[in-house]
Length: 187
Image (cartoon, rainbow, N blue to C red; front, side, top):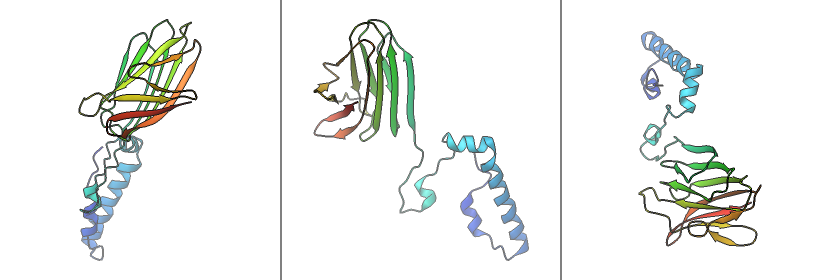
């Protein structure tokens, strides 16, 4: 949704002059109508109402357009990939219901982005679940570590065995170590 006028121009009107006051009131009315309609609010909440730092002044560097990547992959039978380009947070849920080892790859995952993964094994036997990730430029992360109550597991090379009927939920973020590592804590 494009606003009918730039709100910053409202400051240029001298509302003590009747002709400018009429234009000012009309522009404010049009802006409110654009914002408070169902489609206007929907567009703003879905990212069309992007507010850049330049709107707040030259000294401010801010982009409030937050991309939350939330994906329910459902029941899967093959390896899965989720593109995280530009995401400010990532949440993924997936389930298996057959005897299959699964890898989840998070592509274009930036440093510091919070990640939550929920994996469910309904496959009838213990299955191995692995997680891989790539940097925004496409280079593979050195490791994806999951810390469970018993061990630290490298999900890129070993993966984690999840019991039949078991679930594992893990959360963490990519950290700027000497290598790019995604550090997760499994619950």
